[in-house]
Length: 289
Image 1: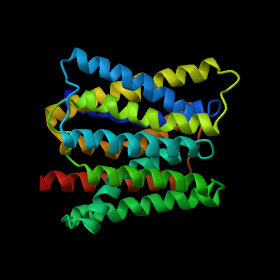
Image 2 (image 1 turned 135 degrees about the vertical axis):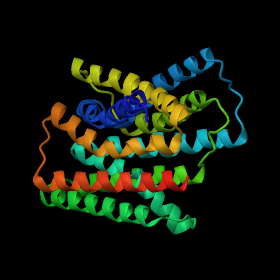
Image 3 (image 1 turned 180 degrees about the horizontal axis):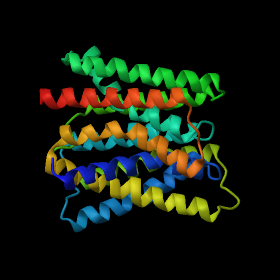
Image 4 (image 1 turned 30 degrees about the horizontal axis):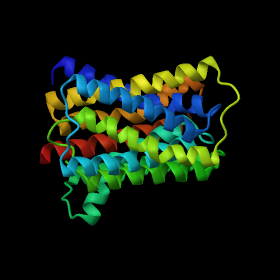
């Protein structure tokens, strides 16, 4: 793989992983559903504008329309919504590690419910990845981390994994940035009524939170998305997905730098095992492809 593609993959993984630490900064002052509803409205509108400037069309195929609705609800409203709620109570590193297991969950569900073949390498990766997560979660629960927050993150990862299996490949055929923008608007439309019903507007918002909010819009929200599409176009989805194995490390590292979250020896061991498991699963997929 060319060095430039490796740098693109590393940048994408770092951007994606940084979303959890900056989200925890935001939800310390602003309610989670309000945060996401506003963020998706802004990010979605910007993505659609850029898509139109790139010549992409509003006209979607039936499969693409399905992907917009399913991912708008499952990814933006459920997955991110549940994670942002949980980040009020649990460390960002924990949320990042759980979210990073989504490729493992997709592979496991595909094998269990769709009869998809899993090689020995892939099976070893699944087992190792889940053992690593159990090791980390065990140390965190005994250390006082709220189990309900962990449960919300797991539910969010499951929702996204099910959606990924349900509409796999539905976004093919072009208009990718338009589809992403519309998905964000769907997420905003779902979360806005919930925010109005159950959350109160904050009295004041600090400059630190405003900076984190702007970062969420432009870096994990837009820049990472554009970088991902560029990477997939150059090396393919299967090879690009291998960079997801770095997400646990980057998620923990960013949380340590921004939030001073500490890690014990068992946490570090668990992160290494999860990374190895995700890499094994992605390598198995690459060989099968």
